[in-house]
Length: 424
Image (tube, rainbow, N blue to C red):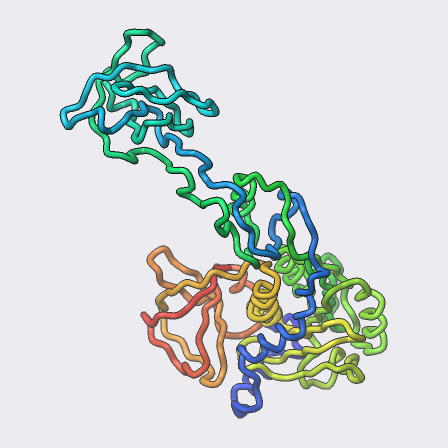
């Protein structure tokens, strides 16, 4: 299969890079630190806003948030049953008088000695009660109609049985969520349970995304000989949007540096970051390199495969990242640098979940590079590699559910070796 973006980061440059001396490439950690330094201003106090909970999904929390109340706010029943004083029921069980029932939402009267109160799940435990006996353990095993002389036989229950203690989830004044927490459904649900209607979050990051290349054609148009359809724009826009970033697509830029500069100048206004794909390697028509000739932008190689060629700096004062042109390379660049850096700075997007898995097959890797392979994590904890190491294999990427990490220094791993994988 031919590379969708033959210029920039084709399979041939990848093979050439394997033989470069190690000292010529920046480590993955060093480049991530450089990206973090570039994007540090996005963490400024001015880039925050107060949002109602229903608008805060996917944002990062700005400050530690203390619980204004305890959860639960009062001791309550975990089951439908009878609230009792555990001391009233000996080992052999006891017959107790039935008090008025306690529905959820009611404030019950204190429990009298020698009595049991029918109680619903979530209802407040009466004062004096310290345990709940489920209705199915009672005799009779159903709630009785109200009667002054009603009694029920109940088995013993230790103190605390089926009781949710006040503050057993979180105490008032305790830290409910820490600064930088990603606000997903569970976190927003917790805030709602605490009675908090809105929250201060980081502003969403806006990105101008530009695909480059004379050979690239928008999907849906006729494909002339020598041309290929643009996958990078859709791929990265989808990844960034899914991650909670606001993406502005500028279409496909031709291999004209002046026109690219004009496009970046016009379309980049008001955005927080410019991201381009392609044109960052050492070929003869690297339009991004040419357009950035008078800008404080560094083009370098990171000790990573795929995604070695990278651009980083500013374009007319605006943060700029230049990703390689091959689709797998540009997605890996996003996952290795932009996603984790923004997660660390702003609490969003959510970082990828790392898990350990065993290789189902052996692999080889450039010893002086961090290799990122695509794979499928199986239910038995093994990971099967999808396709080869080449950065144009979109079909293999589409069938993968993890990124497989082979650290720098590992030239070969045997089947059964343990590796770190990131869930996609």
